[in-house]
Amino acid sequence: RAREAGGNGWRFYDAAMNREVSERLAMRNGLRKALERREFELHYQPQVELADGRLVGVEALVRWRHPEQGMVAPLRFIPEAEESGLIVPIGKWILREACRQAAAWRAAGLDVPYVAVNLSAVQFQRGDVVLDVLEALSASGLPPQALELELTESVLLHDAEGVLATVRRLRELGVRLSIDDFGTGYSSLAYLQRFPVDKLKIDQSFVSRLGEGEDGRVIVSTIVQLARSLGLGTLAEGVEDEALARQLAGLGCRFGQGYCFGRPMPADGLAEWVAANPARLPAARTPA
Ligand code: C2E
Ligand code: MG
Ligand code: MG
Ligand code: MG
Image (cartoon, rainbow, N blue to C red; front, side, top):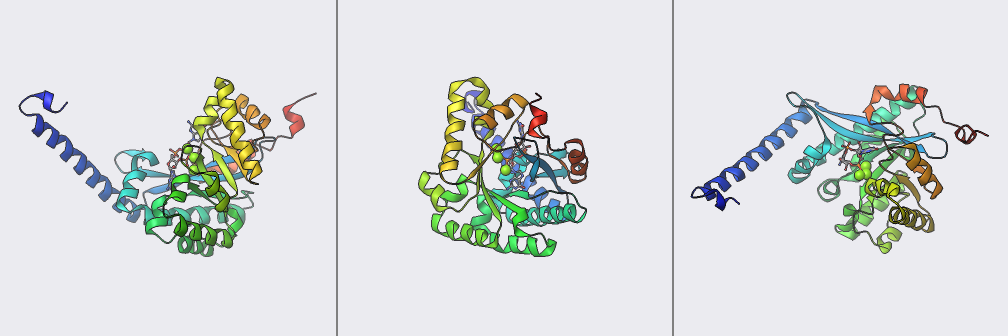
């Protein structure tokens, strides 16, 4: 396409490449400064028991409050943070901040059973995740059972032996482990059996296909049965309406997360959310 532009084709291509390089460098510098200037913040999304809407935990989701661009979504900066290795110090801050916040909720009497933190594969390759987790727990005083770590299937694929040892160490600390976006990667049954995880998070692409007929139902129910046979729990991601929530519960999925229950919100919004969303008794959902 660049060549079709005519005689200046290659120059055009160079210009586009230069622009990409300079944008990435700017992003990288911005990320480095953002850490120093404390421009990252965590939002929290409720995870509930599908049967009664009870809050079982929250997922911490990072945002970048950019001085000029406003709130920047993670998908716009996490890839460059991973590429540059900056996800290691950023991820360390995320762990500390999530644990600090979860401990603060507990101290304030708000019952948030756990906070789930996303870990990038790069944190396993280039960081010391076990040390970062230990530091975050000890600085906050949060009990390890109140921290969940979300790993993607890609984490489990790289350097399987090294990662397996790390995951086992994390498990020994007493933290919970889940597999994020389950079904989008390549984890085999053998991997699932070897890695001591507690829960599979069913990717939202499968959840949204539930409403579209038999095929969607088969995939979700297969994942639920697989999890059950391995002794793992299941949480559905991206549950956008009540009909989906009921369908998921009917298929044996126990937990859910999505706009239908609550969007990611700043930490100080959670107390209000809890007050506005008392656990509904099953009886209240199906009036006689
Ligand atoms: P994820 O971990 O799978 O997080 C779920 C994403 O789905 C979040 O997007 C959330 O806002 C969105 N979501 C939740 N409920 C619904 C729903 O009902 N419908 C739809 N359409 N979307 C829903 P977000 O916050 O933009 O994060 C995107 C991804 O960025 C995350 O996917 C995760 O892979 C990554 N990410 C976010 N925070 C962190 C972090 O602290 N560390 C790392 N390493 N990655 C992060
Ligand atoms: Mg996640
Ligand atoms: Mg996910
Ligand atoms: Mg996802």
